[in-house]
Length: 316
Ligand code: FAD
Ligand code: NAP
Image 1: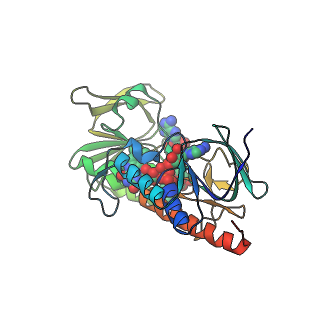
Image 2: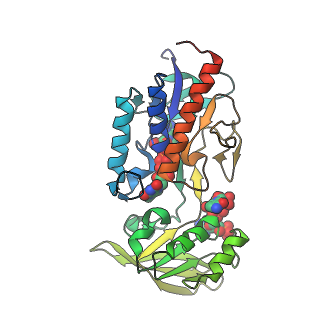
Image 3: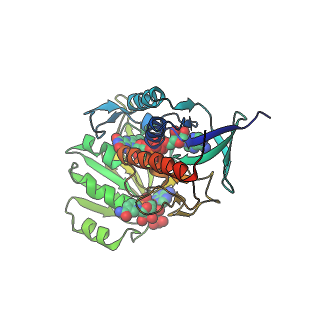
């Protein structure tokens, strides 16, 4: 077993939150080490155009993340391609073990492991992902101006996505597997009042249908959960909004979490339930889930880690 590496700031995750934390921690001369995980660059590497990152009218998601990585490296952050297999937060320094066999002892830890959208798991959904099938209306709604779209789900996310999509789409059909929504009443009220929205109760999406050349969605087949009768709904866009899974496996038994695994942070802070452990980005955020908000939280985490270390009088 190799000798553990002692670091002042260990950042886990290489999405906008992780890279922003790395930039700020490096500029604070804290020599941060960032472990990228199995998806270097995070969720934005699986999308195409990003049109809401300030300063870039349109940029490909993977290109944006390469720029963030380069920026973090240039400021002096050490970026390492490795995946964390376990962390022990029971005492400081915190211990992180990686797949490559390296052990890190960290004075402070910034968790930025993100979240992943839940998918239905249909083979046809997989075929059209990025070509009409999306899990992010804020990101992709703009591409469906004047078109019909379908949203699947019955929680806050689905209702908010359906409402948001009415800004672009000519018609939005919300398909929900029960006859009542889980979403907050106020959101339901807005949904029911909106003339552009139709609701198909007691239905589950059975299949996404579309064309091969060009690859694109033309509709969905929804099955009645009791009768099995199929209803075909024409649409150009299909939005899956059945929840997100925060990537909190590493810490869910050690930190306080909420809403199905989101790490709880203190108000106006990225501090978690353990002193010296900070969390940023989609891992903590069940509301906004945007690149820019993740980056902002990454910035906060680095500044708070810096302040924490100063208070502890940790010497190099
Ligand atoms: P993520 O981007 O989720 O990154 C998490 C990182 O953690 C990854 O690098 C992963 O490898 C790493 N990681 C996880 N577990 C471990 C581990 N055990 N060890 C080491 N590393 C680990 N937002 C926008 O603002 N605009 C858009 O246009 C937009 N489009 C989107 C399109 C799609 C298809 C999707 C899925 C999301 C989109 N989003 C968009 C949302 C945006 O991508 C997220 O809000 C943002 O990426 C969250 O950043 P993050 O840093 O919190 O985590
Ligand atoms: P959620 O509350 O878990 O709702 C998921 C919805 O998808 C449910 O209606 C569920 O149906 C449905 N669903 C789940 N799996 C499905 C499947 N395989 N097939 C079909 N339908 C499926 O998730 P969310 O809406 O993303 O919200 C997550 C958390 O974030 C919640 O705590 C929510 O309150 C919060 N949130 C808050 C805001 C806000 O405050 N503005 C916005 C968004 C999210 P059932 O109802 O039948 O289970």
